Length: 302
Image (tube, rainbow, N blue to C red; front, side, top):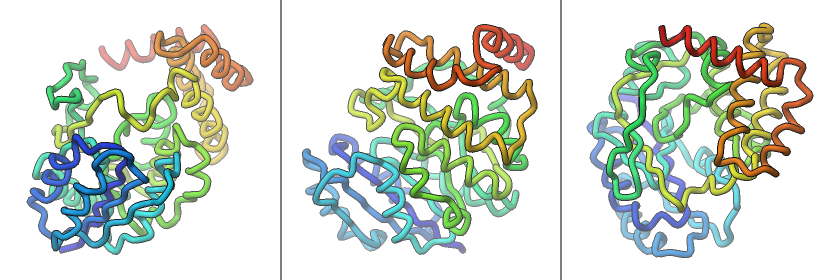
């Protein structure tokens, strides 16, 4: 049985740590190691994690003396410690079903995939499920070539919205430019999944094996309010367009999504202007691209 390295980066999530680590230890896939990381938390995280560090499944517990201010610095630190063939970045405020690892590892092996991910149930700070409409495209398992997945699901809305839902091959991660990923503090996960997906196949499991927690103390903070994620999404778009060779309609669809994103009420006026300055250079961007996006999405739901 192939080993999984479980990387759990944490910053100030003391309230959720016991439930989180217990859900990792409860996995029915037996061959895994845990790498605990703490990015200089100011709450009781260190004390809680120090207790778990004594567990035989825990390979190491590394605590930073100063906060990095960048979650992807912690991802890279964890990857350097990982020895498993597969990797699961289990964010410290989320929760997993006991079958998450076994199901996703099976997908990686059976579908010869580079990464596999599952549907996520969103929960609030107390763990209560948050009702959300589910796109029919996510009702059934599938696998597809990575470049197709990038075109459809990673350049508009980032369909892998939570690292906790993903297990991937460590060998493929070694070919990801983590220093480049770290330049995108708000959208680096998007670039990471793109670089991973372009190396092979992507597999998806429709069952909700991951619980994605929503609360006020998330690392992403005010990135959307400032428009930072939308600006960084454009820089990533520019990096990806040449190798992926998008069609004009694919460009219109992606631009239309970001037109919609920048007009959300959660984006400040200054954030909107920042996003417009970035995406406005694209000839496909504007109100017409938004109409194209709406028409295309309507057809997908028919």
